Image (cartoon, rainbow, N blue to C red; front, top):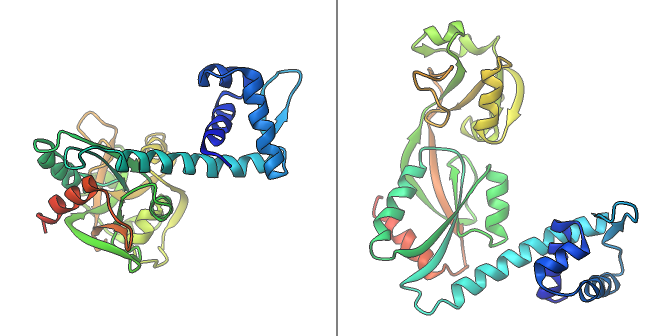
Length: 287
């Protein structure tokens, strides 16, 4: 199975058309069709459902599985090529960082800025997501570092505790009666429908929350729209959602809520690129 053919397959999936994919790849349609058919023959499975009426391609179950692997293989190949073929790793390079939502990114940003003057050609690729997504990407070698709440078990990784803590509390509409309080108690929350993130569940160390859970969320932006609409309030960390004077939202700290600390982790036994090593060395200066 050749990388070139996998890239052809990815293009066909994204264009949903052999002819459009051929144009994008600058190859002839018969050439691309033959490569796809050869790939199907090699795998012993049909990858596409072909609709003769619309002429659009859709993936079979086998095609869906292959597409997931193909994208990861293509990304890894690009990453390896970028790291290894760089003529002077002290002058160029890529750093791939995955992180949850937090103002802990200020620490990451400070390190990036500190490096910029000496290494202006370094490129930084940021991925936002929850701990499950980031650990999967890290394990597959698609990112160099993951920034995770300290409640996540990171024993099998190298880790560095970052000098930052987040306040946990409640995101609510400013016309909610609870917004009139400066500090909320857990009793204030017991009858309030709440949206809860996995990040927040991690911060509470897996303890069952004695609240009315109205739903869960991955990243806070979409949850904040539900809060604005009046569906529920959201347990979250401070500093992410817009709670300025012009915003209809407010953040209130909750008494007794644990603060969230953050680790940056990377795989044991896997060599970092020169750019990633320089980034890590800069980050360690803040210890």
